[in-house]
Image 1 (cartoon, rainbow, N blue to C red):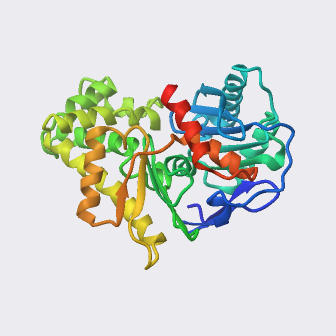
Image 2 (cartoon, rainbow, N blue to C red; image 1 turned 120 degrees about the horizontal axis):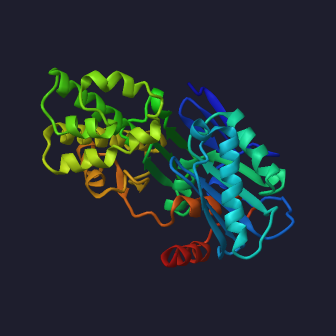
Length: 364
């Protein structure tokens, strides 16, 4: 569906994508290449626009947090372009209000769910410049899995998995080779909250009409849909109120049912975990060179971090024999966005910068 795209970094090419593979300037991706850009002030903006909300972080050149903000969903697929722009404006206003800051920042990096096409990246870059986030050459936009990777691995090689409303995985090797998987709900989103929720609805309906195995999912789905019987199903499903986020909100109840012993729900959760493990294993295989050993992996997203689902993903990776080692994320995705904003301006990631950010998140 997305044959190719270019990550927007106005003024020079940052990364290209084709058939699942990011070809990235490895020195920039590893935060080792100074830029020549000059800026009006020495503050840097990172934005995490995930599937359920938006966060912003403003930092100085050594990683001290000067402001933070939270706002509504900035995914234009759900909020529309006007809604996405308002969400970004709100979260930036929230972040700058703490210390009376104002734009433009020296650099801004936006990691946004659902942004995979060049036209989308360019439009968000224009929005960011219009909202005075940074000068046009200081704006970069990419998918939110990039910031999860940058934050979780503190800019180092490895693999990130996001499983929340949607699902995606991105990996980068020490020599700059990379691979990405994540194609939204119509094409994939396997193992995500939306995928679990939709499959639960289907399994609950099949149990109700006699084609499927009896399962607690039947009553869970009927309660969720607020219907009393199958005769009300079609009208409810076609009401227009069941969006991706609403269906994904079923996922925690599916996990509860699986953990409570429901066999159908348990098999569904194992299937979802296996899909996510396959994502990670595939990315590892694509970026691995013969001399490389085990790849570090971090998880992000509410579903991937849910204890019982997390354990199922780990077990599925073990069954696959994937050459990976799961680690705790060093920084959340919005911290990764801040690191990438610094890198955009040529400020190299360092242990002290990461430590300053970690200190903030521990106390926040």
